[in-house]
Every structure is written in C-alpha cells, then in structure tokens.
Length: 415
Ligand SMILES: *Cc1c(COP(=O)(O)O)cnc(C)c1O
Image (tube, rainbow, N blue to C red; front, side, top):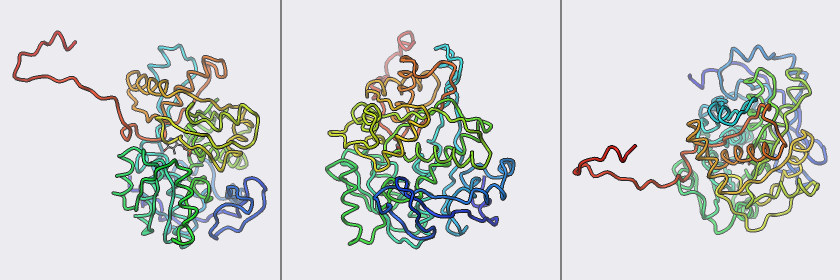
C-alpha cells in the first residue's frame, strides 16, 4: 500500500464554517482559531448537500484504506498540506473465545487503534491538526500530554517541518517521553498533572509564539478523530453497533464519532438509530462519570487524579458538556472501573483471545463486563470497544522464571 498515491487526485473540500459547540455562533473557515469567544470548543461544519452530490458510499470502495478515503468530510483544502504517515483503517477484532466462554450471543468487537502511526489513535487527531496548522501557516505548536498525543504531535510536526514543544506529567510512561524526544519535539517533565502542563502552554503561548494544540482547544483534532465513526459505520456495512465503549479523557473521539454519525445521517448513508455511547473512566479519575450521575452539564476538576490508564487521567475536560450531551442523547451512560479490574481485564483478553490491549482499552472491556452484570447492556448487544493504543507501549507484569542450561532440565516441571 503506497500512502502518498491516493492523495494526488483532485479533491474539493466542503468546509463551510466553524461553530461554537456551546453557543452556536459562527466563525470563518480557513483562519486560525483556538476556542470560541465563550471559551468553548469549535466544531467544523460542512456543506453536506455538496458532499452528498460529490460522493456516494459506493465511491469509497475504490479508495485506499486510510482516513483520506473520507476526504470530502475532512477540512484540509490543498493536497500539498496533507502530512501523512500512513493513517490506516484499523481492524475490528472479535473476542471469539471470550464470547463463547461467557455465552455472549451478540458480539464483542475490539477496534484496534494500536495499528496507527505512533501506536495510538492520537495519530488521527494530530494528523489533522498538523495538516491544518501547515495550511494556515503555523510554525510552532505546543501541547500538554499524558504521552500518546505528544508523540503523535512530534511525529507529524517533524514531517511537516513545524517545531513542537511538549509538556508531560513527571510520571508519564518513560517510553512515551523518550519517543516524543526521538520524534523531534522539545519535551519537558512537569511536576503536576496534564491540566498543570496545559497551564504552562496557555501562559507561555504568546511569548513563545506557540499554537496551543491542547485537546479541543483547536478545532481539527475532532475532525481527525471523527474518522473512527466514519470507519466504524463503513466496516459494519453502514449499520452502527448497539453500544460503543470509549475510554474517555478529553473525550475527543467520543465527540468526534457522535458528530460523524450526524453527518452520515445528513448524507443519507445511515439512518437515525444511534449506538449507546458509553464514557469509560477509572475510579481514580472519573469527573465525567460524577457529572453524569449528578445530572449536570459540566464536570468539576477531579482532585488527586490517579490511574494506571494514563491516557484517561484527565482531571478536567474543556469539552465536558459535549461528551455528556452525546452520552445522554444516545441513551448511553458513563461508568468507572477500578485499576485492579483494568489490570485483570488486560490479562483476560491477552490470554483469552491473544490481544494485548493498552490499559485504557482494557478499561473498556472491564466496563463492558460491569455493564453486562448490572443489566445496562445485554448479551445480545453488538458492542464495540476501543483499544486506543498499542499495548506494547505500557508496562507489563515482570517475569522471573529462568532456566540454567548447564543443569539437567526437569521437563515435567515446565508443564
Ligand atoms: C488519549 C487517550 C485516551 C483518551 O482519549 P480522548 O479522546 O482524549 O478522551 C484513551 N486511551 C489512550 C491510549 C489515549 O492515548
């Protein structure tokens, strides 16, 4: 598969304007934007009638299996601004053994995002953010990150010839920090959490000439993450699943998929049915779950956030209301799982079906089981669980078994 190939065809784009996700006021396309005047995320809007006239579901079949197959629903205008590292479609993998062992009559499908560049689904969002930054003349980008977003930003910026500055909590997995540096960003460990790192970016951006690429503080990461929803619909024959479990930090993917479904319905490519959207968090950092349970629209800062699932250790999210709206409008729910249950789920899926999930992905399986047990979903449901990154990037349980080749081997003891 040659990824540059399919990018050389003529492509119109259909972006009409941007819109505040809270107030709905309009902003011009093709100019650099951060948050709206109300301090809320901006959403990209398209001329969907134009898209409908230009492309059909069947046209997609002749395109490369990557995110650019949905180009009419993406914001990049000029082909030369596409910065690509091979954003491949990711597989949906059935947990066949686990289904059988548990009498699941529906399906458990893992959307395995570990196949993407830099080993996580952050590539979808940051690819789009960097393409648009290039298109709009940005020279320096900065972000706070728990790891995966930083490595994706670093990689795409290096490829685009843009400088990148990255700030991580000091306990960010070592592999992430090193990866970020090796991909060409300037990276610092900060003695705080991701929101503390975000403050450093916010306060320094004017002086440093940074474009603030924090989650949802620029409009295009959502568009990249939206491709998860487009892909899912296409892969399932334009029939959405019954329920989607999404490990929720800043919530970009959940918001993006929800937006994708609305756009697909407007195109007439899917109907009005929607999956239950389930926001999965860890009990050590569950601001969205708390807000969901309390019936409020905004989540409060979660104090002393901690969890092994570092990608969802996000104590406060600027798009909280968009996550909560999608969850509620879909008839879904928000659910928190304990770290030890996450670890056990990771082992169960690896042993049972040969898939090494990241802890955040394992959290979705733990949440699936919990929701099945408490009756919020059923065994007949077709469930899609997001494994957002390669399990290989995360610490694994140590192994201390050794063999001395100079001694006779007791083979019976190996069995
Ligand atoms: C960033 C990240 C998440 C959370 O994604 P959001 O869209 O910010 O909610 C989940 N898992 C992993 C592995 C991540 O890197």
